[in-house]
Structures are given as structure tokens and as C-alpha cells.
Image (tube, rainbow, N blue to C red; front, side, top):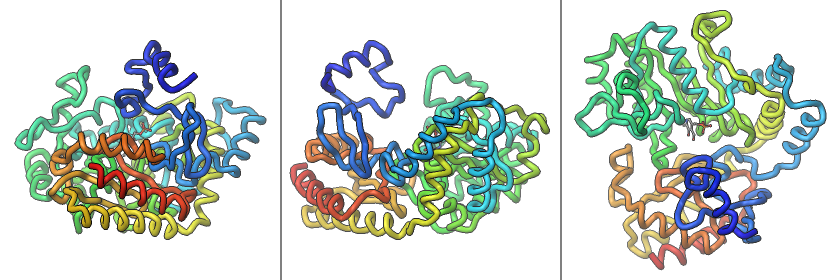
Length: 420
Ligand SMILES: Cc1ncc(COP(=O)(O)O)c(C=O)c1O
């Protein structure tokens, strides 16, 4: 069956035909059936160079043979026992050795679960009710994460979704990423009741937005000053820029960290962890409840162990250089053709914004021409290049991308950007 016929079937089963909203785009989202290395193949047999990489986790490329072997061997031995297994210990040790601030951790099945539990733990540990998040920061799809501010002057968040009670949204404060005076003023008013600040250290869900010099350090200082906790949501950034967290690169120690994506090697995963005294508050030893039938399941753990064991010996310079060359190539096309656009980059992540302003927060990202982006996305698809289908997502480079991919991608961007 071809893409369109299959999508019609999907429409009868799933709202808008998808099981997660960003997978939908009009008129018919491409349906993929295979992936190998940097390429994905759709149900019609067309091949694409993939820059979504499963929205980040597939840093080794699709269908890595060593990872697949480990997963297959776990399948032969059983995939779920509902008890502790050695795999959890192995993966836990790898992560603890790589990320200094993680003294103890719990595995979950998604990043959403990880941040949900981290937020509850912060509240349970401090006995305070407010969580401060950044506008445009995404931490998954639970009630305490789906809040953004209604306007620049509002402090309390308004829900980004129907179905979130006002009582819930009133416990989430929304600050401006990269804006110290805004964060200072929120702390001055609510500081003694703020349980935690949660932020992606590099925003990856508003395109790519880098922290300005000193901003993360400032968050560390102000949270310490008010005895609030600092949670770094490293679901995207964990093991993305090096065999460590972004926190280890900038040398800032959060109290709690959440991870996901890469640590499961493409299998469903999440993790929250951090200071031992805080983590010891988790049940059954402590009084903050957290649980999951599939948490730390042997299959996910085997995928994560295999992935991290390979990554440990990789030179991250490779994916960073690839990204540099790609971004330089696209920037040259932008300049030569006087296109109103700019690119934000962080190591092996980048995003092009159709914007005449430098994008350094949610508000500047929002000014981008998302319609033009969609047009670029569609034209690139025809050229055999698959980007994440939104102006507010991030392109990811994997270790499977090669020189041929790089040249083809720059050539495709050249043709497409000139058309636009
Ligand atoms: C920074 C961040 N936190 C949390 C999540 C939620 O993770 P998941 O989709 O696994 O629930 C995401 C998902 O993209 C994310 O980017």
C-alpha cells in the first residue's frame, strides 16, 4: 500500500492519523518503513538523508548492527521480568561514571515521565509548590510541563493545552530563557516558594537556542541563593555533544537531571537522577512516589548499553565537523542569495530560521516565517532530504552521516533556497 492509502487507514485509527502531534503535517506525512545508517526509506521506496534521526536518539544512525545484535540477544532471553536486572545496573554505572552530578537515578520509559517525576521529587524534597520553567522550553506532555506564559507581562503560566486545571497552571511560573532580570524579578516575588527551576540547558524545542554567556551559571547561583533546586532537562543534550551531559561541558552541577533519547539508543527511555540525598526521597525508601511496569526494562537497557558502549569510543569531533561544514555551506547560500534567514547551531544540532533577528529565546524564534520553512521542508523532501517537519524542532547529525550526504545536502539546500 502506498503512503496515501496507508495514511487514510491511519486517519480512521488515530487522531489526525498520528500517535504524536509533530508527526502530522499536511497534506500527507511521509511514512517510513526502513532505516539504515543516515538514510530512511518511505513506503513508496524513496530514500532520504535523515536529519531528524528519530528526533534525536539515533546518534549512531539507523539499524546499527552491534546495537541490533544486543537487542536480539535480549529478546531471546526474555524482555520483561518485573524485577531488577543486571542490565539496569550496567547502564546505570555507565551513566553515573559519565555525568558527575548523577549520584543516583531512576529509569523511566520516556522523557515526559522523567520530568514529571523530577518535578514531583523537587516539590516533595523542598516542601514548596512552585516550579519555574522557561517559555518555549519543552519537557514532555504532562500537566506541569505544558505551560507557557500568556504574554510577556504575565508571570503565571497559561496552559498550552485544554484539560489542565487552573489550579495546576497556577503552580508553574514561566520565565524568559536568557533573560536574567526577568528571572531575578520572579525570584524576588516567589523565591521562597520555588521548589525548582527546570530548563533545557540548550533549548532544542524552539529550534536551537544557545544559552548566553553566564546564563546557566546565573541559574545555578540564584537557585542556591533561594534554596531552590536546579533541574537540567538533558533529554536532548545528554550524550549528544560528548560522552557526558551538557552540564559537564559547561561545568555546572544541577541538583537533578533528566535524560532520555540517546541513552536508550532508540528504545523508549527516560531517566531522572542527581544528588543522592534528594534521590533517596523516592519510594519505597522515601515518601515521593514513582513507579513504572516497564521502567528499566531489559530490552531498552540492552539497547542503551550497546549504544553508549559504542559512543564511548567515538570522536564527537566527527559529527561536530560535519555540522560545521553543513552550516557553513548553507550560510554561504543564504549570503550569496541575500535570503532573510539565519542558522543557530550547537555542536551537532542546528536549525535554520527564516528571521531577520538573531534568535535567542522563544519570542524571537516565534517571529520566524514558519510558512516559508514548511515550503523549504516540502522542497527538500522532493530532493531526498528529510528534516524534522517544523521550524521549532532541531536537525540532528549522526555518526552515520558521511561526506556524500554532506555534499548532497548542501546541493539540495542550494537549489531549494534559490527557489524560495
Ligand atoms: C527536552 C525534552 N524534554 C522532555 C521531552 C519528552 O520526552 P519524551 O518525548 O520521550 O516523552 C522531550 C521530547 O522531545 C524533550 O525534547
